[in-house]
Length: 179
Image 1 (cartoon, rainbow, N blue to C red):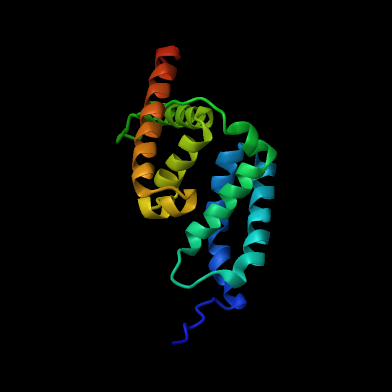
Image 2 (tube, rainbow, N blue to C red):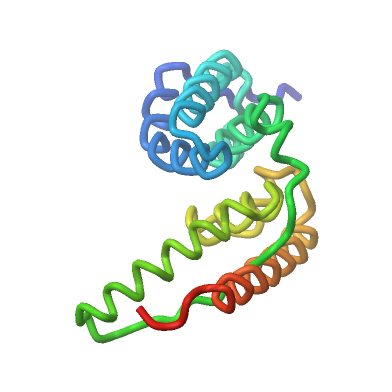
């Protein structure tokens, strides 16, 4: 019995890939922590994906495939090689419902503290938090992007959140009290 060829026509690469541009750039920027480096990573990701697109199989997750290419490109870059040996830490932010000036100021400070804490996390923790919380990927999609079992996704995500929370507590205790 002949297995039907399930490859995607090259004309659809643009249709599938272009809507992911902002998400890929955002992820690359968080990983590299440099706008120029992020642009280069995304450009290289698209070039690699286009070259390999003829082998892309229907029924697989295109978004996860693109994110995996981006992650692998980052990990083999100079920045990625340097940052894979970072430290661990985590966050808990205070939500506010009243949009008064004081609340707005505190929310901005909290966001900035979270942003700073995220940049201090090691790449494996940073990337899993970004894929889950920012890109809103399912555990299965994250598993495909990072090429790890779903159970590892769940445990690493738990450890990343715990580390972020600890780092935020440390930052909060070190911050001046009173705005």
